[in-house]
Image (cartoon, rainbow, N blue to C red; front, side):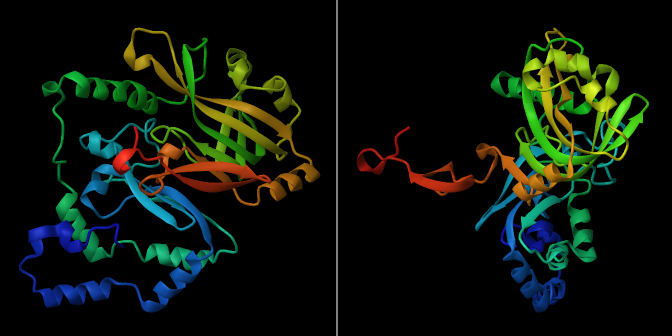
Amino acid sequence: TGLMETRMDIVGASSGDVSSGEEEKKAEGAMPSSSVIEAGRNAALRVIRSKGLVWLASQQSHWQQGTASLAGQKFGVSFGSPWLAAINNGVVPSEEEMPALWQKPWGDRRTELVVIGQDMDNEAITVALEACVLTDPEMDEYIETFLDAQPLDIIDETKVDGELAEKIKKYKIEILAPKRNKTQILTQAPKSSEVISAHSCLAVYQGDKGGVAGFQIKRYLRYAHLIPDLASGLVKEFQLPLDSADMQTALLVDETVGSVLSKTIAYLEEGDKVELEWLQIRVEYDTPINEQRFRIIQQCQKLAKLEADVENALIDQYPQPQIMIRKDQMCGPGPGEVAKETKTGGKTKQEKTKKRKGKKGKRRG
């Protein structure tokens, strides 16, 4: 709760005609019961890791995507890219651009949290999280304050130049342009490529429908979240166009190992369990048209039919999804500390080392 602005902070002077006593009564009525709070605390003891998008009842969160990160006892919320609704001037994207996430009147603003733990009480955790949701009266105040608001630092691009203008141009070309286009099929060797996210999971083959092989994701083993502005996050299905899969693989020989994908799929029957790995990649084409320079593709790295013993071994190896996030995207260590990851006996542990200090305690660099 300390990370969220109070309702008085949100509505400001608009509630100044209400007495403090009445406000206290309203606040008390909005608080969850002590039993819910206690159950939430007990449930949280079983949580090991949590990460995801958050939409908080604050001014900054209204304009920027919040990323909540919990690792052990270290928790923080950081704000990064703007919500698409905040930079789209209220224009609803096409169905191809935003088929499922866009909801009027708030656009793509949402909360999506992944919670990982051991012997968790899912019901208690759900109740505790739902207790954080605004009540109807609080949401009415939020609507009154923010629905038709404009950001204080809204930029008129016709009046900026220099470094800021270049940053805006780069963001539009490298992030917004590929994000607004459908996932592409690679038809020519790219000038460069960069991995956005990496997926490893157990899936069920859904058959060939219209030349597209479909896979339903049943269990994630590993996931790497590398470019937050573009990464898909954990998904429920994967589709592989059969007529272009082998050609794309040939163009990305360094990204794929194993036999030709079409031959592997030909041996599969609908309902077969498979081990599936793929990369989400941003590729750059050699073209003078900026809006067409960058595209997002998906490249299957591994596809293998699962035998029962192999499936059981993978489940034993990954009892919980292993989610990897670049250190520069996570909440960092305390002042003067640098986090390092080392592996001991197959397990990752966190170490903290103090930055060396020069004369008079000043940090070097």
